[in-house]
Length: 261
Image 1 (spheres, rainbow, N blue to C red):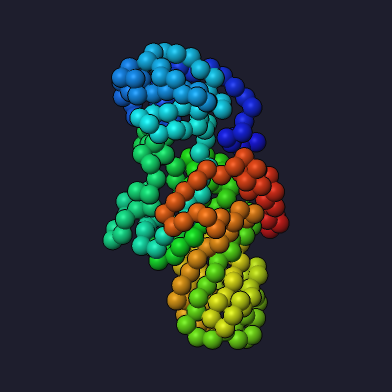
Image 2 (cartoon, rainbow, N blue to C red; image 1 turned 135 degrees about the horizontal axis):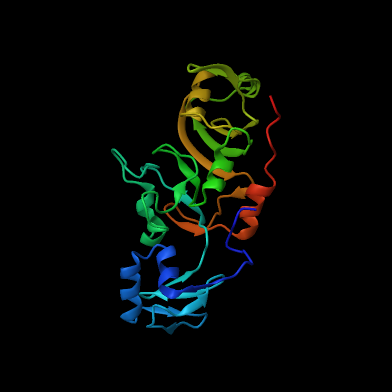
């Protein structure tokens, strides 16, 4: 079972170790924050100045420099990716999506692979739902070709859609780097220039290349859902939030395995 924010297993940890695990800096920095009276703990936060104070971390709420947090053994997030951002820690032309996250989420765990990582990628001009986590098993499960995780895209196209294009997308089109046809799991025209496309695999620029293969062109691309998780209407571009325990379970426990070859 993949761990999530609703785990019932509980242990005691020193406050400085809790802050370190949550990405607030080295243990020395975390110790300093506590000793300076910048950390408060509890549902009704009370300042704690002893770094060695032992607390039950599961369900713990705390405040660091005026910002409220809750302890998460592992991080599972959704981000509404805006256009003009790259899904890379070392972006080239555009800013990184990681600049949209607060420092602790970027630094969780310390070490070379610190912080949450994007679960797959979206092109810089593509908007919509992006998942992030520091749980390697979760990331592998969501991106592995052994699982058919449906992803729904809202596609604005240049030329009017017709049934021939839709049928070709359902039946499969051949991309230049793979002789095996790539098929849409579902495909429908919302209106003459709005295509809703569901894919269960991920290839480089896949939606754009599939649409080009049927003689059309993508003018706008937005991912609206991954598995059972939909992008909330009240999550604005550039905003993020924690996935609920129920959402994490729905994404992991209900994923079907691909048939054995």
